[in-house]
Image (tube, rainbow, N blue to C red; front, side):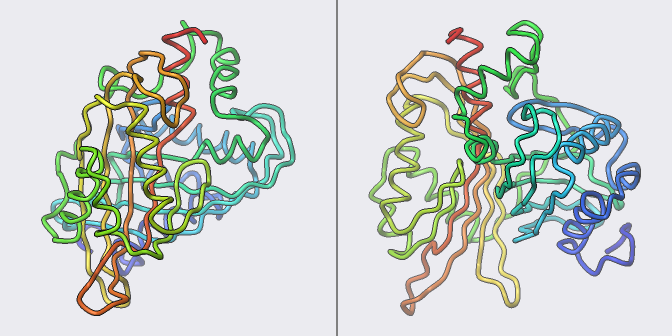
Length: 328
């Protein structure tokens, strides 16, 4: 890979390798090399620039969760080393909450949760990132509900005027990556499926998802078959029925020894006007950043369908937006 350390055979090895090197091998100082000085990092709960902040946040997380592991499940990517590459990286993480920190006083809770991150890299460094951690799964394992935790977080951060503000189009920062992915058929097919669902065409589910589809959704919720797909997407869309749905980025890939798969980064932006996954309508304006991965397969010859789906958004960031606007 031109411009990248030759110890990495390909882009997935780079992404998985530096993740382990930074977090598990304690190579935090390598962030000076692997992250650009002016990197833009967007999480649903915040937006920041500069690798100095990333280094500080990494050390704070490891102080709170010192035994944290990050197991790379997949890297779905597009681009070239010369022009830059965008990875959509899926991780399962384990950790024990043995230190005080952003998640409150140490509880000793052993955690398992997923992360989905889109990273743009060129010349051996990441300079643009979108990262979603399943904070809903984390706090539930600690005994909180996400809405309750969001309210407590606002208070611990000094109240509505001084607390860290969730990511919205108003406070987002333009980064160097301007791409939208690739034109691979599997990415387009998955984008079409999610778009149809967001347009209330849930009849697409039994035609595009395998009847035995396995699903992994926010809150650490694992599901099976068409009903899990319907319940999840219906609950989200029902809560924000008139919100604008946008495909921000899409990738499709076919790689040896791997199923055809797709990665979609998407957003919902609008008012909380309906009953759904976020309780009684509040009228709050909410921005939802989501990332979804899908794996396709043809158990029956000639009928490739979605056999696995992984989607994340940050429930706490959504509840925090609602609480900041309603005071509830």
